[in-house]
Length: 366
Image 1 (cartoon, one colour):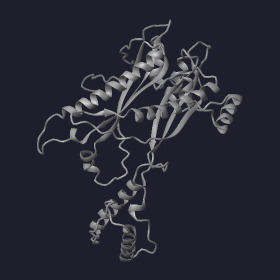
Image 2 (cartoon, one colour):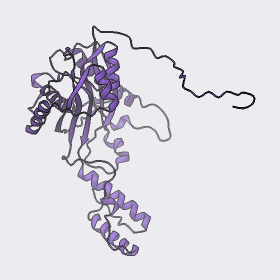
Image 3 (cartoon, rainbow, N blue to C red):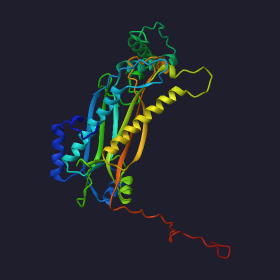
Image 4 (cartoon, one colour):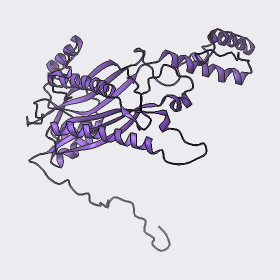
C-alpha cells in the first residue's frame, strides 16, 4: 500500500504537534537530531534544517498461526505482513505530514523503530528465573512442585521471605529491592499483549534556493541516509525521492527445524522458507521504488526479526521445536533519481604536510 494512497490511513496531527510546528514556523527555530558533521554537510548540499519531525502508531498485531501440510516448507502469514506494514506506514504518514506543515522539501536521517509490548507472563518468568538463580547461589531450598504455568504459584511470597531472612543475616538496617524486582537491563513498554509502538523520526529540510526536490506526489521526500551520505548523493548528481520498505512475515513449522542429534547439515526446507521470505520482502521494496518512478535504491538493509508473540514464555529454548517460529524479514532503502547536475566527486589526493618535524643527523648529532 502506498503511503500516498487515500486509503493508507493518514490521521490528522494531534493538537500539541500542530502547536509545536506553528511555533517553529513563527520563531524560525529548528530542532534536529543531526550530528554537527551531518548538519554542516546538509547545509553544504544546499539544504537548511527546518525541524525535527516524527510520527507514531500503536498497533495491535494478533497473528493466526497457519496449519501446514506435511510437504509444505512454510507459509507467509499475509494478514500479519499487512498489519505490520500498515502500522509503519501510519507512522511514516504522520512524520511526512509534520514535514508538510513546516513547508519542507524532504526528510533526512529517517529512523524507524519498534517498541514491543511487555508480556506480563514473560516478565514474571524472567523474575522467577532470576530468583531461582539467586536462591541456588545463596543456598536456599526451592519448592519443586511446578504447575501448568511452568512455575509454582505464590513463589513471590516465598522469595520475599527468603530475601528478608537474608537481609537479617547480612545485618542490613534497611532491606533493598531484591534483584528479581529490579529492571533487567532492557526497556519495556506496557502497551498490552501483542501490541507494539511504531515510531518514525527524522529531520525536515528545505532547499535554500527553492529548487524542486519533492517526489512525484508533491510531498516531501524521505530518506534514511546520514548527512554525509546525503551530501555525497547530491554532489554525485542524484536526489532521493522516497524511503521504501518491504516486509514479509513467514511461519516456519517445527518439522523444518529438526535434525538428528550430533549431525551437522543444512536444513533445506528452513533455508527455502527464509529464502522465499527475503525475496518477497525485496520484491515489495522494489514495487514501492517503482511507484515513485525511481531509477534505483541505495543504502538497502535487510533485517530479520522474530515475532512469535508467545503467551507462554517457559521452555523458551526448545519452544521453536514444538511450535515453530514466526519470522519477519524487513527491508528498507532510499529510492533515488538522477538530476541535471550530475557530476563526479573530487578525487582524493595524497598530501604531505610541510610542517612535519624532520630530524636531520649532522655529525652524529640530531
